[in-house]
Image 1 (cartoon, rainbow, N blue to C red):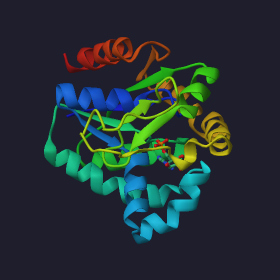
Image 2 (image 1 turned 135 degrees about the vertical axis):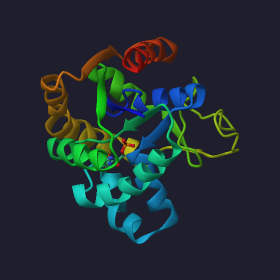
Image 3 (image 1 turned 90 degrees about the horizontal axis):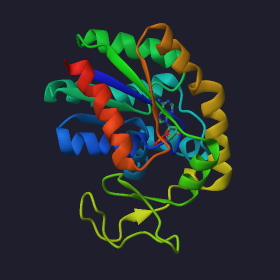
Length: 221
Ligand code: AMP
């Protein structure tokens, strides 16, 4: 199983692309943000611990994050699909190291890091007008009036779209500044390792999909 890290700021479209690739090509998609939101929604101990941190747009500490991620990773390994897409991890340089260690224990390694490059004004516009399905985490833009569809195009749930608390303006600015200081330097690390692939994420989703698909296909050869 090849492992692809999806890098890019909040709103760059990592989750949308990972879901497309998982649904159409049968890859496994792990979104650490979605894992944490599930914990929050079901009110688990871990969920209660991270709720205010996630909603404010700050990062959860590395050990709590990997506690949650390790379970999903083991399940993904067992599914043994052709590709694993990591969306939301690593989020800082220390997580790059921890991720390598946990992957190695499962005889896996990062095969490529795909950097979704998107101008900041586009990120803000997308984050301020998007809806997330509470059931499957699918994300859609609002219609011309800023409203969500009545049923989810991915899982079919009705009235399941809601605005994420951390898509509110104060959390968005925190998330973008955390991204710039903590997460953006990761690209340089993967570049040094010869694993970085940059794509233009400021295109229609189907065009981004072609670019992401091309990176993945090349690695599978
Ligand atoms: P996302 O859905 O990827 O935008 O993540 C939503 C929120 O979950 C982030 O703003 C963080 O609070 C938390 N989060 C997700 N992934 C990580 C991670 N790898 N490390 C720390 N916090 C994370």
